[in-house]
Image (cartoon, rainbow, N blue to C red; front, side, top):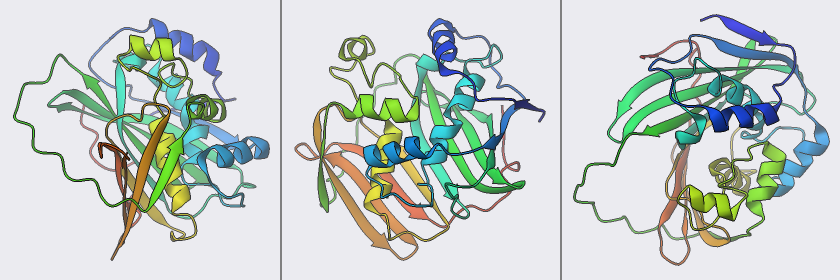
Length: 290
């Protein structure tokens, strides 16, 4: 797969304008990746990210922070002419991060982003956007975001009864401002997170949290109890409407942790996740069916 090396991070303003104008253009994913070398962490921005997500300040980057740094590259890839779907029509349904060893705030590294694994789904089409961080050509962090492109209305079926929500080990009050606060530190300014009016346009009665904020908040709650190398795999369920009170449940397992976030009043699920052994396979290997 050919790689385009960028000289600087893409500017998000023009990319958001491109996202608003894009329409479906094809049925295959771009056969290329984008890479940015010489990436360094802006320490004040990292400190603000830690505050918004609940992490302690430290030398090691939170596992979710490189996702923020790779976001402009992902936006550039997903708003380009050879990307088959409009960005605003995609739903982020899952995310898997593998930390092979902690990235340090003082390190310089490279970020690479590509799209792969276009595949049918019962509700439309799925694809993965994969980001990697490498120090001296050694991949130390990978991130796989799975997106769903819905097609029509899902076929009617008998719904299985919802599983009972796990017993909460903590209760979080999620303020209305968390959408705007996370948008400011992440660059993800999708209006469903920041504008009540535009959230309604997209079918939500109020603004909703970013799924990656929820994932980050879960990892912050487990801080100090995770190994140096691990994988963290989550599925995003029902959105958190802001403001909200949610329950966080975490249960240690033989090989890691199981955790979940649910509505404190109704028990409706918002996120289900697990801490597992890291996947140390070559990130350039594997199934990339299109």
